[in-house]
Each structure stands twice: as structure tokens, then as C-alpha cells.
Image (cartoon, rainbow, N blue to C red; front, side):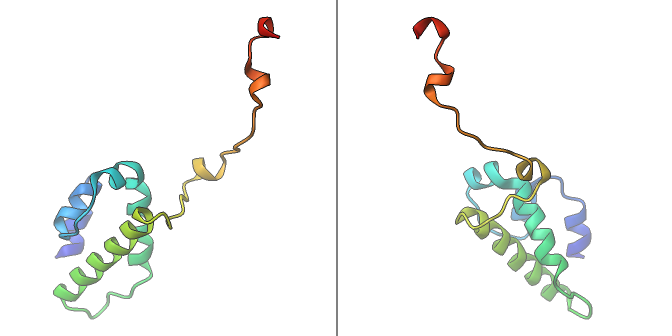
Length: 102
């Protein structure tokens, strides 16, 4: 069963290969965990009960494509705590110049 197979995978690339979804390595390198988390969210919001195995696989494939495209096209939201807690700020160039240069 495809869900059992997916449960054994350990890398984002394996998900793409198993579900036969084309991908650009550069996108996966930057957003692999976010893509997989979004894939899980999309899949989790879908009722798979009563579907034939080929339909479950098609739903999984569509969910991975949606998750990948969100990040490949810049629509994806990085939802991990480390990104939520980041506090970007502004530091003036004059604040980082050595004191001797002033």
C-alpha cells in the first residue's frame, strides 16, 4: 500500500521519486522540510477512506505537487518555530564600523 511505503521513506527526494513527481533539487535543498510538512497538512485534510489504492496514490501525488509548487513559486509559508521566532532587525552601517574609524 502506498501509505505504508511512504511511511518508510527517509528523504524528501524519496517521496518525489516514489510518487513520480518531478522536482528541482535547488528547491528541495532550500525547503525540503517545509514541503514535507505542507504535504502532510494537505494529505491530512483529505479523506482517504473508501478510496481504491490507485486513487490514494493519485491523492498523495497531487498533495506533494501542491506542496512543492507552493515553495517553488514562493507561496509557501515557513511554519517551523525557528522561523516564527526570528526577529529581523536593522543595523546601520555606522553601528558596525570600528570605533577607530570614527
